[in-house]
Amino acid sequence: MNYLGHIYLSVDISPIIVGNFIGDHVKGSKFLSYQPEVRRGILLHRAIDSQLEFENSFIQLKQLFYPLYRRYSGIIADMIIDYILARDWNKYHPTPLKKYSKEVYQTIWSYRKDLPTKTIAILPKMQFTNRLLMYGTLDGIIDSIKIMSRYSSLPDHTNELIPLLKKNDQLITYLSRDIISQMKRFSTEWLQEQAISNG
Image 1: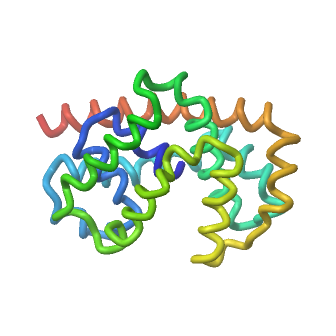
Image 2: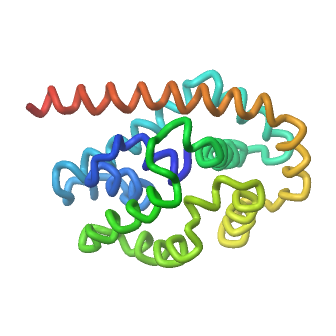
Image 3: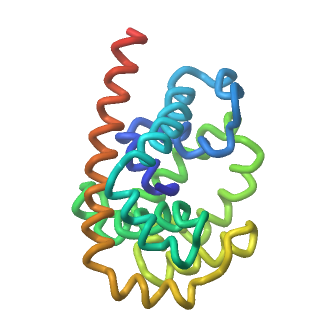
């Protein structure tokens, strides 16, 4: 799952949202320097990423993209899950995504002193273009993947990806919805277990 997926799985708890959002930018034991609730969000991010690799629907989704992306197929699967989540947002959350995303940006900025340098570097442009909202259109998610290709080793196969997504829309939707459902259950239970063990 990418940014929107991790935010959604934070169950609307502000410091958990922040920790989950910055999770990829906090390496090793550096999470220990954060306040407990942000720390929980960082650890939840890691738990989600680990659990996802065992989900059968995620494995199938990666296989769909493997001929094009090989070892990067998991990254594309993460992005496409966010695309389905954003596209079908009203099925998952009562707040419209446009309003929800603006509130999320405000929440993250309210923890500015806790944000890693890399997060501060990407957040302004992400907010300006409302990338979370843009995930919900095919053009928007393709643009996000192209941006990632420009700034990383991810190959740009978007010309081939677009017809693949259109041809397999029903399967991709089914697999992504199953992943979102399974990971929502996992995240809720993980947070409950953490609250009990820390209580």
